Figure 1: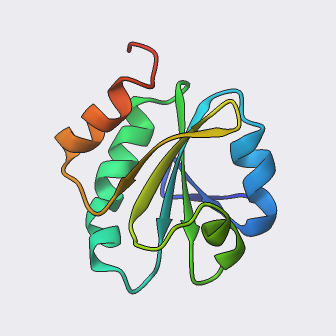
Figure 2: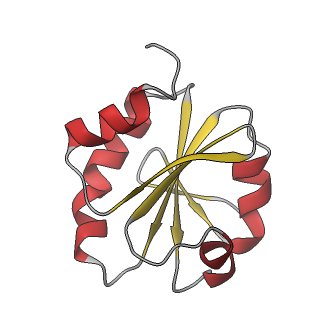
Length: 115
């Protein structure tokens, strides 16, 4: 089952990760996070804005590492927030730690089609 957070962010689980992320025709940005993580909460509004801006070009998802540790372990997530951009079922690039909006836009820019 896939849940939407807010208007545009998909909440993942270990069981939905493969179909939602690895089989997606669009690029997928996965935010590995936890409820207790302050920096994770700080970047949520930025991720929501990016999800709306890149609608149709990028899917933004969140995976709670406390509730779904298997996928986090598979991708060697040891610090949160960790953002991994997937394209064609493969991890393309990773960003660890909280970032500003401009840093996240720069992070995504070289991997996404022009707006």
